[in-house]
Figure 1 (cartoon, rainbow, N blue to C red):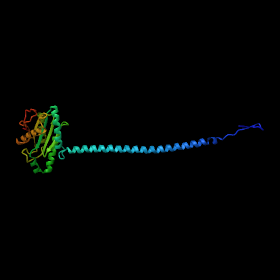
Figure 2: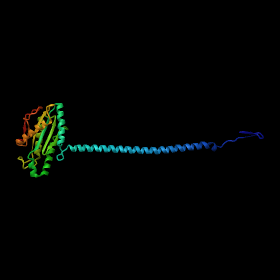
Figure 3: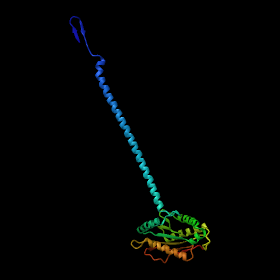
Figure 4: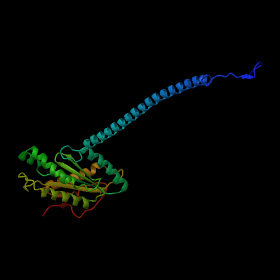
Length: 266
């Protein structure tokens, strides 16, 4: 503000509001533009990162799904590798694995292990008379009966070879095994499958049974197989269609006594 000497006036000069705010507005616009640019850049980067994360999650999900599918496939293949294709029973490989496992468990627990060996009577004649397709169907029906004898997860019904089947029974004495074997024999008789080549006129089976408590460093799994197989041979040579326990087989395990060495339908 300036006073005019000749006149009683004061003169005041100042910048207008737009002029005062011009620099501030320019600086504000510049910073706003910078912030907006940074927001756009951050938004694009964030969008890209979200996309990458989503793709990674999708990829991990696919990997987990593929891994689960592979595990399921491996389990299926493993199951198939341990299953007999014709009868649906466990195959010989599975039987051998289970026998070793249960034999060792029986030694640790000092428990009885029983084995039933089953053979279809005059099965070669059945195939000769009715054909191999009918023979396969006959074996499947018999195997269904044998499979139903498995009452516990540890029981193993297997196709031992050809028309010979087996049932492994952990924690079972000879009396219990003989009862199970006789039930199988009677159930197969009740199928009443015609067989003119068999003296009984129907399909029958013979079974050999043995059980004992194995002793560590003294017994081998093969002894149980040999004992049951010897009993099976006795059943076959004494007339077939019967269940025998081989009382004459000598093994070094602790025997499980039985009052009956042979069971046959009256």
